[in-house]
Image (tube, rainbow, N blue to C red; front, side):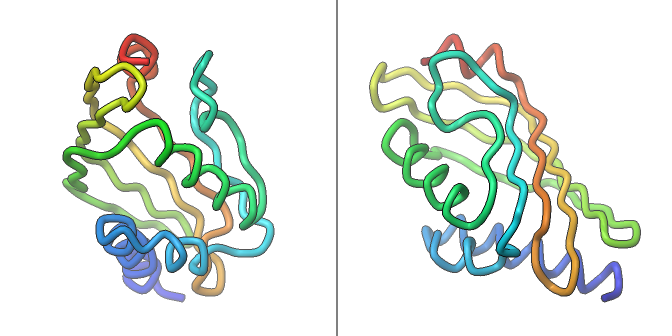
Length: 131
């Protein structure tokens, strides 16, 4: 696939996430997807997840614990099968009532129109403080 097509695959996933269509997000993943966030103590949905079931569990657990107040992708770049997106988000933590925000960088690997790897970089200290 072209770099433009790979960027479109990622954009569709962001659109589905923002629309709350998590089933469509999971459908856009390869069966053996690696889904990696920083491991943050006492935040159950962080760390590495594998496979569609692992990612579905990630979204379910995350939704139980926090909800997005704002989620904005500010730019994307692609090279080969790699797509990097950066942006800013604000989350509300349901258990504490606190909010946290930060810039993020998402590194996606796209093969054959499916996501095979996702890695998030964010302000883990801000998340930990809110939780």
